[in-house]
Image (cartoon, rainbow over all chains, first blue to last red; front, top):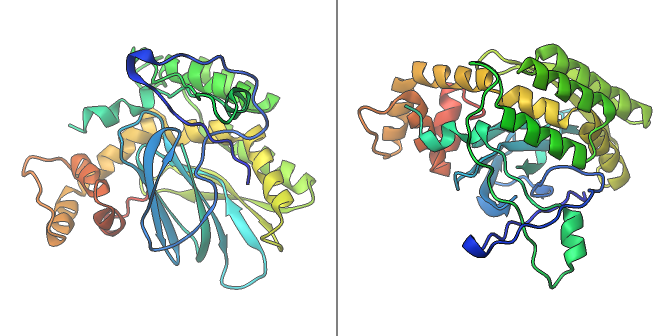
Amino acid sequence: MHFRRRIALVTGATAILASLVAAPVFAADSSGWHTNSLALTTSSVDGCKVQWWGYVDSAHTNEYSYCSGNIGLQIRYKLYSGSLTYTSNVDWGYSYVDVGAPIVLQSNTHH
Amino acid sequence: MVDFRRRQRDRRYRRSATAATRALAGTAALILVVGCSPDTNKTTGSEGLSEDTFSLVLAEARDEGAGASQMAALEQAEQDGEVTIEMAREATRRTVECIANAGLSAGYTERTTYTGLVIPGYEAGTSNPGDDVAWQQIESCDVAESYWINQLYQTQPTSWQARVDYANLHEAALRACLEENEIETDAQASGAELVDQAIDDSRTAGVCLREVGITSW
């Protein structure tokens, strides 16, 4: 996965606005794909504090820094039978998203 | 009342620097962003999306690779003040078609959320989970055809209000679950405020929201 990462580095009154240039293909900041796990992982996406965790059959993410914008969650998963690994489209919320599937392998938090 | 800050979330969008900016800046240089846009609360109607939200989403979509059909749908939604289920369906179907045209397995799906909102979606798969080219193709199709329409559809004010109404209906169950998990609650807190409280603690987010069926907030 080559989701673009955008890093917020706002330094109060001294913040300088960057000139934005044309972007390459992939949109939206995201955490990148990570293994679904019970372990609570904290990170920063789009300059916002997010955390994610999961169970065998679900993945969860939430944003806890009161950033504006939305938080999205996408998963890769398997069914109980069959050889394909699937990906879902993104489920969106304001601060929390929980997505379920038979066997959740990976998740990707968007902001 | 729901936490004011959270109520504002759908009226503001962050603007941030692109990866291309970062690349230009170089690894040792500063990476700068534009902060949150002003919350002017300009709305297109009582149930419409904020004009600011539309303009920001349109700009982001244009900059980040949305295709012509998705841009046309976004512009139509801007005029109408909302994203309709049909717009979301059409965008998702175009995504499925794009993925299938790339030779990958893809199917259109729909599901109904806890608030009754029907969400168009897709299942796209590969027999080789290590096939980065396949995953990249799927994401490219999503970005081109439906990423922003899908996001706006799920987060527009009518969708948000339905979540608040649902949470308030389940206030008692939410309160009971939080207290069972040793989280003190304000007796005056609404169901929506209790959801916010549950989310603040990952232990209860997974347990209490699931208990009442809340899968997104």
